[in-house]
Length: 230
Ligand code: AMP
Image 1 (tube, rainbow, N blue to C red):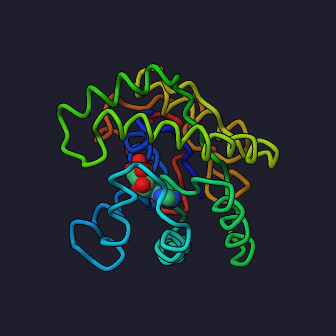
Image 2: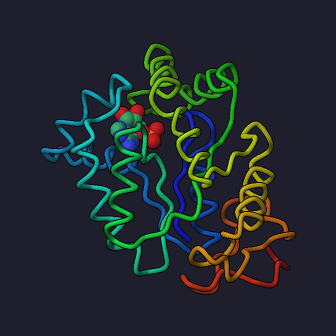
């Protein structure tokens, strides 16, 4: 299973990424987490990326490309990946297409979490009180939402035109959002490993209530087929 996850800040992207990657037994690749690690380790890339992160702007495409290519190349032979936070603009989407084509990788779906701007702001302001992310203050939060609207939201159309968009209502409870994604991927024929949807995931099953309870698939190439406990 090879998935892209497109979602505005505060839509529950990280939470859904963890649940889905666990469910499908694929690697979770978060460009935001990778960048935050580089910043914490004060690497040259981290030092360059920090000002963009702190402002809530997108880090230049070329810095992202190298990070992503390396991780995707490692994860792909092990059964797939979920790319959380990439692509983030049209140039990156076209680049992702070209990279996938060159390497013979088929993307099964681009998952889009739909959440209203008011709800995003409410959630992010609540989170800023409990987490200490340097980009969680009101000004930066508003800017990150604007950046999403201007640069990332148009990718929904880009992937819709390619028949890859899986759009779900991200304002539902966490478990329901995960289940909708799994069901829609299965309905699109992408429930299992590879484009053929061999396993059909847990279509018709249910996803346990917390991320820790999502049963990982039995192996990277064999998502569960019984639909029973998922
Ligand atoms: P996230 O954790 O996905 O919300 O990302 C946090 C921040 O990392 C973003 O506000 C950007 O500054 C940066 N970032 C993450 N992914 C990308 C990307 N694909 N392209 C450019 N910047 C990114």
